Image (cartoon, rainbow, N blue to C red; front, side, top):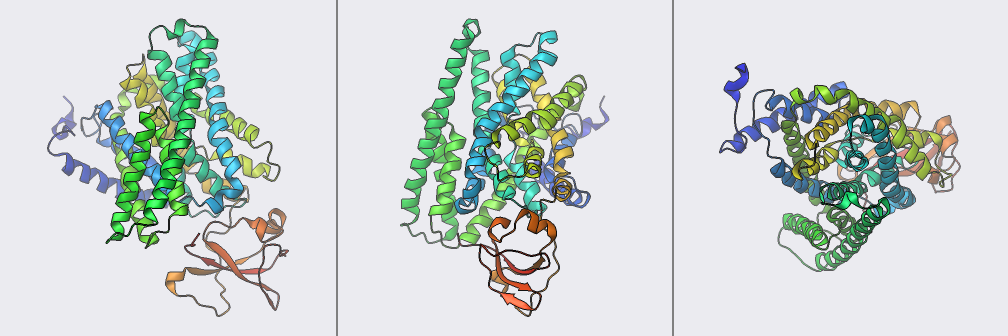
Length: 494
């Protein structure tokens, strides 16, 4: 008898709120410890879920269909918030790069990983090529929640517009990975389809992929601009109602697109970008704060729930294959796809490409997608779920905890806590923080002018002191080592 069986509860019982509140409280407290030791909070959320699960305290939760529904709901809110906070002006310099990475980059990563799984594990274990591509598709994207959490919690101010590129890529590549996952599941579960020729199967897959993407884009653009017309004209008595209305519009875009066989997550993300950039919201800062709070709640719920589903006792047999596949993704598949996709962009340094390759964090997205084959009854679907779970933990621990160190080693981030020298200037608190940055030789090497510095969103240079002279900054100003830049860090109105 399990000594912990006295703590065994059913999470679908009437005590759901009590147990959920305890888990969330513990997860939030543990995340504070993680920030001190450099471990990503989302990694700890998964561990808390596992510790409370059937192999730990005995909390019973094996409802995969319910978990998939809750996870998809949480993912829509996370992606909607990501789109809402995406500045079109800031992402304009990296838009082509981001779109290429989130489409062709995912396809290349899946292709390379799928063939690796097949040639290393498929032949000897009797696993079909389509099944190998299904597993690769599940892990094809970087997780937006993980990337946003690490970049923003560590307050990394990255050079070469890398922050905007990484957030755009991670926010927009989940739809492609989900589409490839759904297509692979359909090919496996549809009777007789695997008896067809490779050309027929490939043609069917490409048609479904094109339909998903085209319908997803059209619905997203249509709903986004319709929402702009409504929100710019309507006056509501309470600013909180704007948040609720915007969220309902996001759900609507997702639902309509899915009904038309399009990609709902892509539609929702595009609609959110349009709303975030084209709608003049009253008390915008409070609205964004609302979405930040609800997004953190959704991340907590999703990671804890997925942790509860995982049973460590089922994992020993798949740990070694999972780590090998995770290492291939981390050191081969993603770097190759990144360098191939960014080959046309000569302005991006090799160091920037290496760092982009390293920020390929897995998270709740891949684990959520791994529920698709389980719910669909795919053969060995449970093993796929467990492998993806192990790979995600591996990625969060190795990549997630080393991102700040990698950025510093590659000289791609500005000082996190620069010495303050404000030359007697002062600002009201609501306008932001006043900071000073001393230009280094590395700054001049990577960005000889102010325009080329690619300062993050919300940061502006208001004055330059060179020796005993005070200069008015402009984009084409040539920087010199030793220049002092007075920087305002705060919310921007664009």
